[in-house]
Image (cartoon, rainbow, N blue to C red; front, side, top):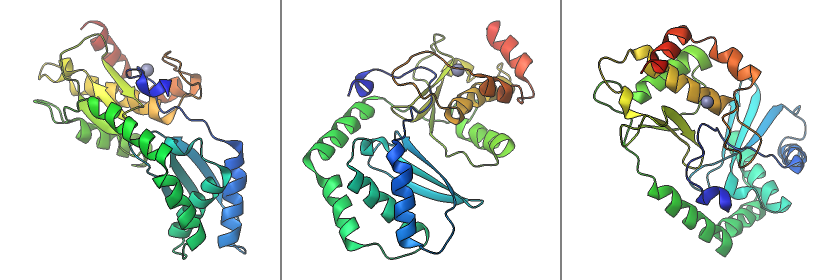
Length: 245
Ligand SMILES: [Zn+2]
């Protein structure tokens, strides 16, 4: 529970830890529903959704499953049930009643609802101030960058200007709230748009290059992160601007 009680982990993207059994369970659930179809490429991630949210997508023949991190400690039969439900939904197959019941029971269980409730409370404490500033609209900037650099494929987290004009943190990604926060200092006409774009882009790269360590507060900019950061056309100008701020 400690990761939920800490305040925002600066700069870090989602902390992902995948149970190796999940791959096996996915294959099993897939085979049961589509015995003759070849097994597609797939990826399963735990994701800090604000509730017991689980999603599945098919992109270019590849399946991406995101399970709420509330599922992390679930028993194998519960994980099997949710994978069955998601795969059945994706291919419009009927959902097995036993599997549906198993998942419902899990979702309704005392410990899970208590944990969900607690997390909602903790997450709720974080005030969201909104993406629309006086000068720049962060969601618009996010979507432009998403189209330009990520083929529009990145799921948009919450994105907001900070509550105050803090200079301590220029921008950060808070995985507990799945929120990118950009300091309100930059919501001014004398701040060039590329500087704001760079801050958002940097945090998007944290989403794209998640850190597998748990509980670390270090800001990790690995080689892949840095290589991708260099694709930003105004990188040097932006860095210079932020340094001289
Ligand atoms: Zn960073």
